[in-house]
Length: 249
Image (cartoon, rainbow, N blue to C red; front, side, top):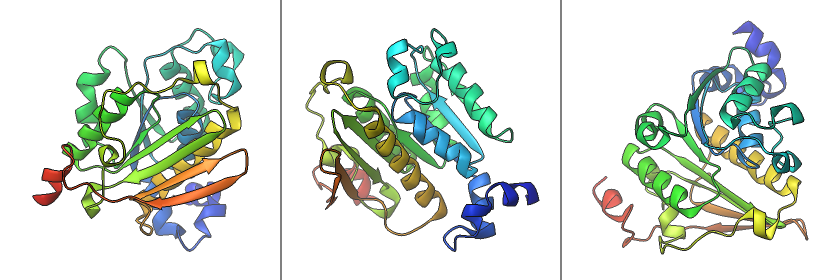
């Protein structure tokens, strides 16, 4: 632990962290689903903060077009599985970090057990079916979920925590079968996903440290105007995903 204290001295000195908080982070675990523009900074900041175990899930390989915003990767990684390249980069960040990967072919089968084994889940995916599936799994396992999204010059981030009786992702976005707009078609500026991914890491760290009421708020960022808006989210008692679960908790 003495080496950890030296390594993380700039955050250990914070009253919100301290020695006990740093040990708590080292004993904690997080699952990051999606290792693209959001998952890259999120995973890097969690590793740098001293979170002891990261579980990574992604099905893609690194492409040249990823390098504009996915800061986990370099040119030498083009063609590699993102899981392999990301695991190598994160272990290089902290040799004490335990990294586990969920292969794309078995990801859905192993996700429930993986979610049950971690303390917080970060949704860094880019499509609604995955987001809704992950929301349902987190509700079933009663694990906090940090969701982020970014496109063009705007982004949003929110934390959901059923343990505190708050709303779930489906309370904010009902599952209507809508297809999410893709960055490939609409575009996105690299630092926009960087900011939102970093915010996801921040919210995850706050949840792990038990700080404040960070869940149940939607943060929306307009990068054109550098303007943040914060909206309180209300649980939908008729939500098919969390309504009954909350009433029985």
